[in-house]
Image (cartoon, rainbow, N blue to C red; front, side, top):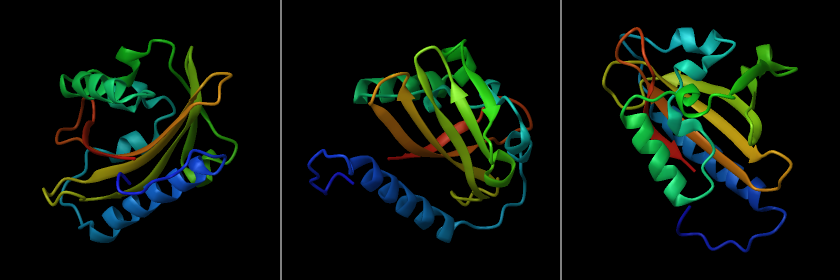
Length: 163
């Protein structure tokens, strides 16, 4: 998306969403079957903040992204990073595998998009989409993440951030 010059207008978020969906679809098309899965239990959790990496918190600048990525690399969960984090099943959540997300300063949603082996290591990965905005504001952070876990317990790891 860095090679596209877009004037910020009302349609920017729609364009950004389509760009993320295209990147995600490319990952899904290239996914392989996995031999082992340690991510399936996360898909049914009502409050997955303890196992989702800190990198899923809202990032409104490149510095925020770098700081959250560092926190995730050392195994910090989203809940470790944001103690006020809460999840609630969205109205169509069971059908769409969607959770509403709220914290002191952000609100939005998290959707489970796909599972598969996206990096050909034999472990099942999960592709999630997260949209967060500043509570009461107009700024938004849209991103998809490829997450994995190579052991049964613990915080998932970020393989890739799509934005």
